[in-house]
Structures are given as structure tokens and as C-alpha cells.
Amino acid sequence: MQADAVASGKVPAGSGCHGVHASARGFGHSVLQGETMRTVIPSMSRGRRRSGAPHFHWGQGVAAALLALLAQAGFAQDTARGGPLYDELERMDSARFEAAFVTCDADDFAAVFTEDAEFYHDRTGAAFGDEVRSLKSCPRDDGVTRTLVPGSLEVYPMQGYGAIQTGRHSFARAGEPGAEIAQFVHLWKREGDSWKLARVLSFDHRPTPPTE
Image (cartoon, rainbow, N blue to C red):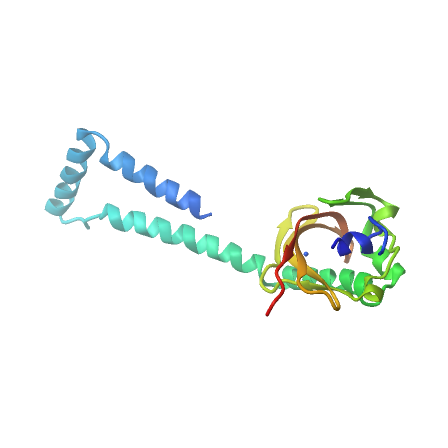
């Protein structure tokens, strides 16, 4: 089913940890490599203990660095899945598909996009400008619904332009078993006090098995 493309007029009717581990591995390699490192570090530790200075534990330093990196990664993940920007673009995503699949309002649908909007679909190809902004069918009339996959939506700010929104959504047709699921990437442009959808990637369309 290619319902997202149908609504856009694309086809006729018919949404790191690796770096942390790498840093830890690199640190461990340099500490353990060569006789010099094995002899100098203990001597430094003994010198500090004799002088009464606090003893520095290398293991504690590595643990603290890893915890700091993980905390930063956790903060980035939290802002991608919540906050004012996330909430605002979640509403814009809802408005787009409300106009396309529920009210089938051509004017509201067109108002979501920039004048030079581009839409790329893995099955139907590319569309540009007015072709993207035109609502040429109403999936509602064919019993088609779109559902955002819970927990899949993420939003990332783009400095000086707007934001990137990613997620997964499913499309189902009344009376038919199963559904189709796909991934999407939306590039939103900030224009004054409003948001406009400038680029859309819709891909990885595949069927899902019927639920029992």
C-alpha cells in the first residue's frame, strides 16, 4: 500500500555508545602497552602516597569520563523525544496527516509545505513543488488510516534552518488484514513564526503480519 504517496498525488488513488566504547578501548590499550607505562604509573602513585597528596586511581578517572559521556548522550536522547520543539513538530506532523487522511482539505494540506517542497518515495520516486503540495485523492474514502508508531518520533534541531523529524508510521485499510509500515524523515523549515515542510523521505515500506 502506498497511501502516503497517494495522498500527495504521487500515484493515482485506487512518519553514541560506539564512541564511548572506542574511547575506553583506546585508553586501556595505551595504559597496558609497553614496559614503560607499566613501571611509570605505579611509581607515580607511590610518589604521591609518600608526599601525602591524594592518590589518583586511573580506574576512577575512566569511570567518571564514561559516566559524563553517557549523561550527555542521555540528555540528547531526552531532547530528541520531548520538549517544546518536539511538541511543536509533533503537532505539525499530526496536522499534515489530518489534512491528508481525515479532513482531506486541499488548502490545509498545501499550506504545510514550502513552495519548493521535495518528496522522495522508495516505490514511486520523486516529486517537486506543486506536485507535492497537491492533494489529489482522499485516502479516507478508501478506508485508509495512518497511525504513528508510538515512541518512534524523534526531533533534532538544525541550526539556522529548522529541524529534522524522523519516525515510523503504519497504514491500514478497513476490511483488509495486516498493514504497511514505513519510515520517514521530514526536514522542517522555520519561516517566521511558522513551520513549513521542505523535504520528505518515505522509505522502507513493508507489510506487517495481521494481528491475532
